[in-house]
Amino acid sequence: MSKLIAAAFAEWRECRAEYELLLLAAYERAATATNDRLVNRRGRRAGIDPMSLFGGPSVRARAYASDELLEHWESLPRVTFEQYEAQWIESREALPWAA
Image (cartoon, rainbow, N blue to C red):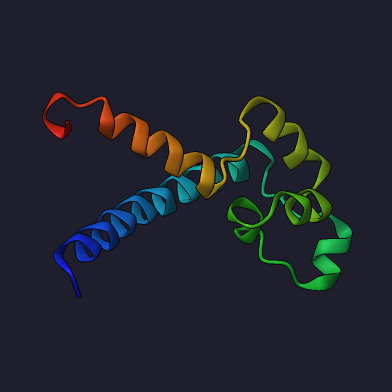
């Protein structure tokens, strides 16, 4: 594998690992705020893992999220990996030694 591709993969893995930490923190914050009411009745019947609502597609997350979780997301919106990645790249480009 080329050094350029290896470096890109390493950066992607770093970004993804940081995103996973963000998801865990968002999940824990939401669980506390909603008193662990994260999944609606339809989601419970379908066996939906509440954690999957934080990183999966928005349409799916909203379909299975409880009213309490949807309200929580109004004040603390869920962040997709695409959004996080863009912010992550922008913050790294802003570092003086990264240029």
